[in-house]
Image (tube, rainbow, N blue to C red; front, side):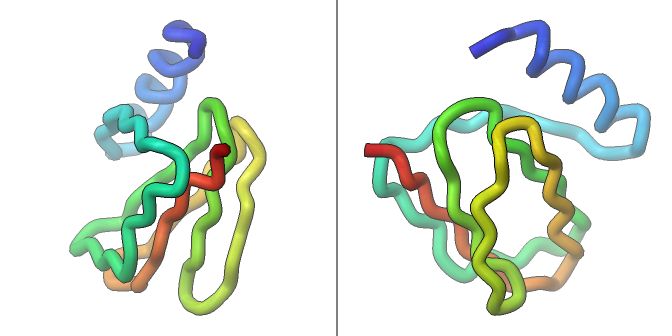
Length: 81
């Protein structure tokens, strides 16, 4: 993973009032039915992720930003092999 890219993304998010972090999950890991009190931004930097958001399934491209509004139930799955 390109650290510069990650740092640039976090800098842009901070400028918009968000804070960020990086997490790595093993292939097949699922986080089911999460709800947050604040809006959340998500971006895949490498690999493949499946996001179910308000009943709609998305597979964001690397570098695509997804906003998850506060209070919306969502599930995240690492689709890696």
